[in-house]
Image (cartoon, rainbow, N blue to C red; front, side, top):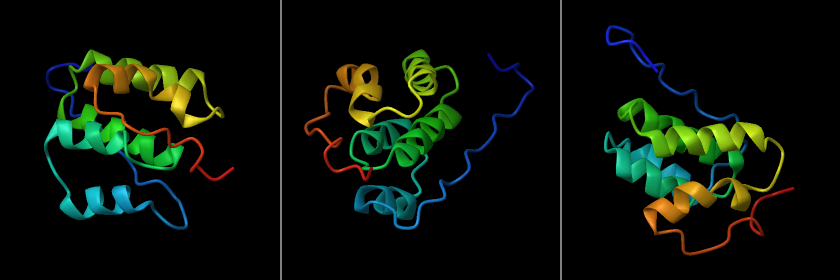
Amino acid sequence: MAKLNQQPIYPQLPTITAYSPAFATALQEDSNVETNWLWAATQVTHSAEYRYCLERALYINPSNDVTRQALVMLNRQNGTKRSKKSGLLSSTLGVFNKDISAQEPS
């Protein structure tokens, strides 16, 4: 957990040749609202975008244990399809309404 005087590290944008439409929209809106990034995490098509959305939400609210746990699970399952990685987050948000693993490039 971050110390009180320690600033969180702003997440780096993923290096993807073409961002998914949901991710491009989230970047354009540049929201500073945690739930906007958590929702965007459920809509993106690339694992790198998913990671960025979680990291951005955690940057906004470093004390969100659910987001932190979703990132831990993502790190543990590095290299697997995103639909499995998003389980904890999507069940908590209750808004994950499509399986994007079929859309993710291999």
